[in-house]
Image: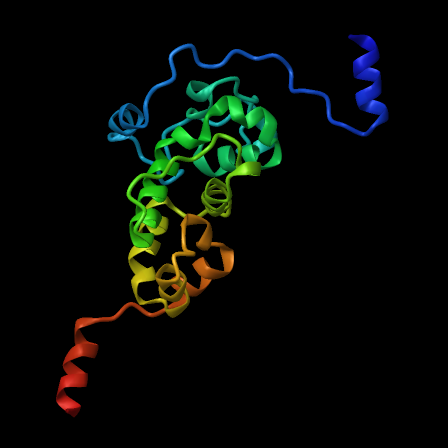
Length: 196
C-alpha cells in the first residue's frame, strides 16, 4: 500500500481524498426542494458567520456531507466545490436546492424535461455552469429568470433549434449578455403601436 502511494506521488497523481462518510440516507431531489421551500436561497440567509466574523470561504469548515454543506451560504459553497471537486462529491451538489431550481429553469428553455446531474462538475458541464454562476454571486431568482430571458436571445435560440443547447450553454458571457438586455416594458409596446 505504501509503495502504491509513493508511485502515485512520483507520477504526479493526486492521492485520493480523505475517507469521509457519505450522508447515510441521501435525500431525493424532491425532498430537498420541499425542505428548502421555506429557506432563503439567495445567499443572504440567517446563517451566522464563522467565529472569527469573516464570511470568506477560507473561514468555513470543510463540510463532510450534504447536510453540512447546506449550512454554508450558496455562493461560498459553490466556490468551495469548484476549488475542490473531489471532496465536493461528498456534498452532493447535484441535489442542492439552488442547483435544482436553476437546472430546472435552464433545462426547461432547452426542452429538457429531466436533468440528471452528476455530483462532480469535472465530468458534468451543466453542473459546472450552474456552480460557476452561483459562485459569481448571481442570486438564484436571477439565474432562474435567465431561462425566461433566453427565449429572446438569438444565440441560445439557434443552439436550442440545433439540439445543442443545455444548461451548460448559460456560461458567464451568455449570462452577462442576458442580464444586460433591457426588459421590454408596457410603455415600449404602446409607443410602437402609436408609430404604426
